[in-house]
Length: 64
Image (cartoon, rainbow, N blue to C red; front, side, top):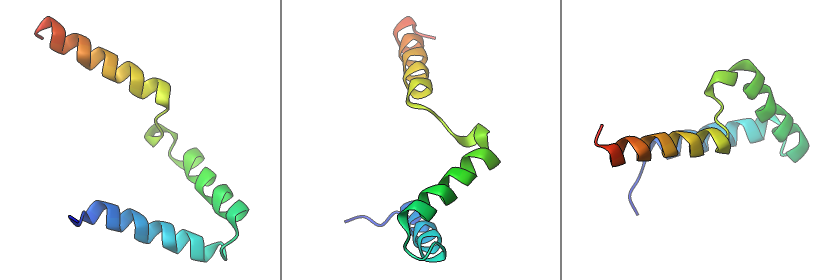
């Protein structure tokens, strides 16, 4: 399997957060939710991604 340094970094951060929450899933989810409010511009919804794909697909179809 190919190693991906970005995936490894994300997993390390997730493990750190999990350990900081003492393995408590509710605390972990709360902690993750805090990051959404700190940097809301970095959060993308499924609806936003679908719209982006539609725009990109339309641009490719029209030859732009």
